[in-house]
Image (tube, rainbow, N blue to C red):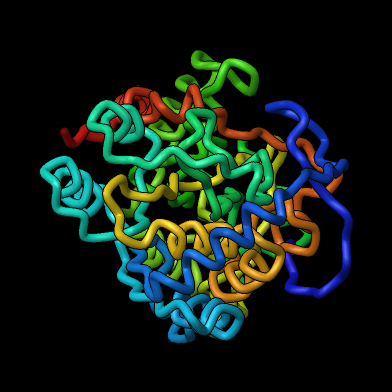
Length: 356
């Protein structure tokens, strides 16, 4: 069961897609390049950022606190922040940029939008590694970074499922007749995408599992937040595949006393959406500074505090603590680029309609 304790741990770099998370790496930063960006940001004076973190999380400051901490360190840059969260919002931003309307200096894309953005030439190419961004967070195409982590597990109602049972739940339990009609799941079971990869479960095992989930009369929810709230109210005992930060939202808001959360090996982990700088941005240096700070120790500590999605490659984040020494299944970029196709197969196997 996950508990929110502040213990210093030493962590973590991905060495293979499926591995025991134990080691670390030091990477180089070109201090002169960073200082040049800081000077440029001083001249620009502002940046408009579109991100996935909500302004308020669980009724408490989310992106608001990120902006406040950033501006305390770099008071010469005013940050204008707006949430660009859903796929349709990102499609709109991408279309506007392709048409020459640069409404954000930095924004986000899903992995399936990357190829379109590159072909439309709306992204700025940046040598992020020289600026000190951890190599694990630099997108293979070189133009963007990932700054949030997504760790999937199983949540359970502690009044209905004792901890001695809940802490031993496995992915097989999500499809077990023992829990028939008692397991809830998101209508887009993203954790199965990670398991689908050839180096983890593979396609056949994952689809067989999905069909068994259907036969087991799983309850499907459209809202992650509502699913966690219903779990807390005891409407079902087990919720398979929620994100840790969905649980953390309940924890931070004080609504999670009856919820347990357990990480199940292999632990599905992905680094979230791609953050990039728009080609044609008038505040490129300030945008670079915002992104580099977001992937600094300070930036990740704030992100971890407000959303629970700090990266596991930063020692001290909740994700690094939770997965240390455990078997982790990392969602590789080449498979994330095909996530729509993979998810479509899984949803069809589960028996749900696929929304085009």
